[in-house]
Length: 116
Image (cartoon, rainbow, N blue to C red):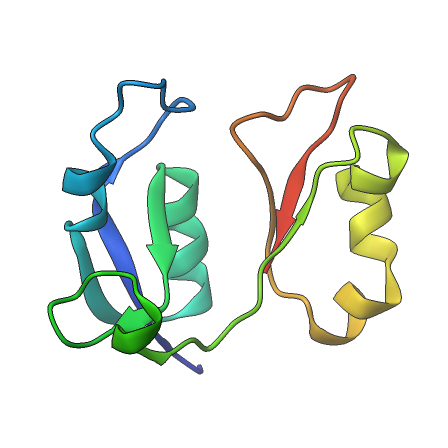
């Protein structure tokens, strides 16, 4: 099975963070790992954020960017276009997609999903 080199955060976000969330501490807690797609999905389901691989001091800046093996598309139209069912059937996902999951702002009447 193929693996992907990416960064995972060590802080799980179960709910959408509030305005007082310590983003500086959060962004400093990413660690580079090689993972299989199912492991990635399991971690996302447990609330662990993921991101590209950064070098240098590890901060997420353009100067530190090294690699990113995926593309994320946030679908937040809050209508049928952002539903899991619609996204699963979309030709782009059928050809290139791997994971669809609800974002923290998702509600059944106003769907929001991320496509990886």
